[in-house]
Image (tube, rainbow, N blue to C red; front, side, top):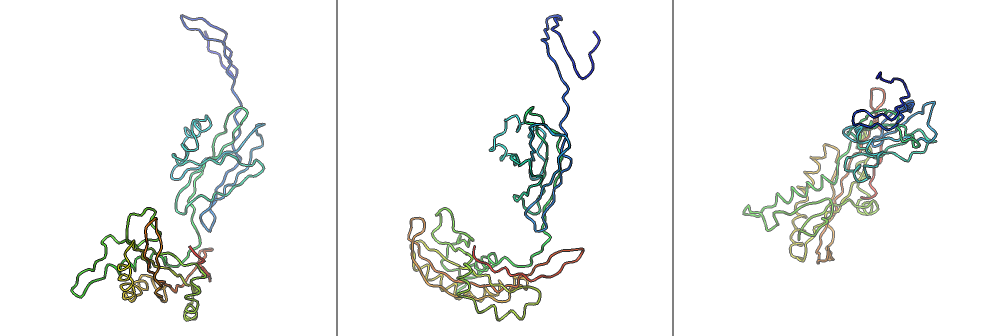
Length: 331
């Protein structure tokens, strides 16, 4: 029997040896046109990507644009097939690191993806889906690495203060050269521990803007005329040591912090790469309260860094200095 060729193949019921072929008709469907164009562009400020597309001249009666996104590598054909077959739940998609833009308004031809990090590569695969026949066009595949074209020259004040306190603690010695009775695992942290697994720890937190101004509002004026390229700023912090049920330990550590201020100031200014103009300390009062169900004895010290903030914006092969006021309002 000669083979049957062409776009429409019809088989009648045929009995051959012990095999039965029931009547089937196989139609060669016209393929769905892909998007006419698809582009991805990183915002110069960083942290976002804009996706733009244009539609083909011919579209199915019931259509939808879908965009599949993954960081590090492109979603596979199998991932896309399984998604449309209903074999991948949202949780499974998340485990695979895949996000689907799936409820896009057909009247719009662009979206902004804010869920990106600078310096990481993101892959996007865009297609048109015929929701009536459950068929898809071929994908247009692109990738991009978002980067900020704005360079901020400053210092991480909180990290400097944390490290300065750690160095001060490490430098403590008695007259005989022995370390005093301070827990060896005393930790200096940027946030309160989520679980109460320590009875003595230090937390560094940024002061709200109004509180910082109340303590340190006058010192910035001393340095404004020395700052040439940037804007003067005060980055202020509260250093709090928390002792569970031990007032004497709190008082000893308060004396240590008072005595070690020159060492902390010297470290912060050296590590500030010339952008920390001064460091001011104000010893706070003692307090008592509760921390995760236990009596907590607290001492504190406020630390303010006078910082020169600088901002450069790129353009046509050169960069220009701009003034920027990045005064913290909290956090």
